[in-house]
View: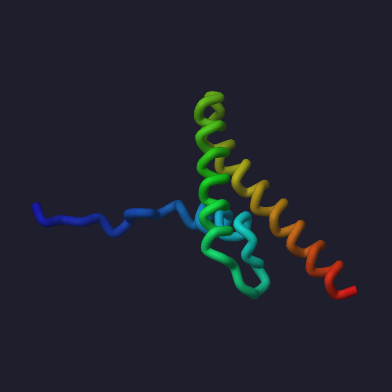
Length: 85
C-alpha cells in the first residue's frame, strides 16, 4: 500500500491551543512551561473523558473545551491587568 493520509490530526487545533493556554501560556505573548502544558493536557483529557463517560454529545465536548479556553483567556487578561496597576 505505502499510502498515508495528509489529514491526520485535523480538528485537534482547538484542543492543542486550549491545553497550552490552560497550562499557563498567555495567548498574548510570553512564556509557558512544559510542566504547565502537560498539566493542561492532562486536565483536558480528564474533562474530555468525563464528558464521554457521562454520555454527552461529542459536539458539546468541543463546546466545553472552547468554554474552558475562553475562561482561561479571561483569567489571563485579568491577571495581566492587575499586574500593570
